Length: 152
Image (cartoon, rainbow, N blue to C red; front, side, top):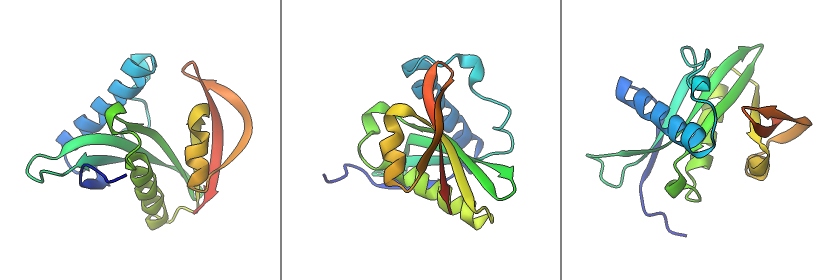
């Protein structure tokens, strides 16, 4: 399917980028999925690398459509999380672009392993990107998840 937009995926560079990323997280996780609002933001946000995906079809007015973050867990481990794409933009490669950007950013920072906690229904998405599910299903904010890993 031909994309109806020009996608830019980059690090959050400004306060406006960070605000847009948090707005997307609130929209997807709190409003859409019912995650308690006190869980957004969390203690990892201050030190995490935040990413933003923009629809830049009109470069003078790019529209934020997705976000993700990378947390350095130490010992070469990157935890990718808070991957969120606005509902109307799903299915257009935004999530994949964010994940590839997150993995490349982790590699560039010397990390050798990526982990994430995937919501069970989207495990196949992460498997297509090379992640492997490990361990049992667990509850996170009332949503079933499973840990996934990938060597970078």
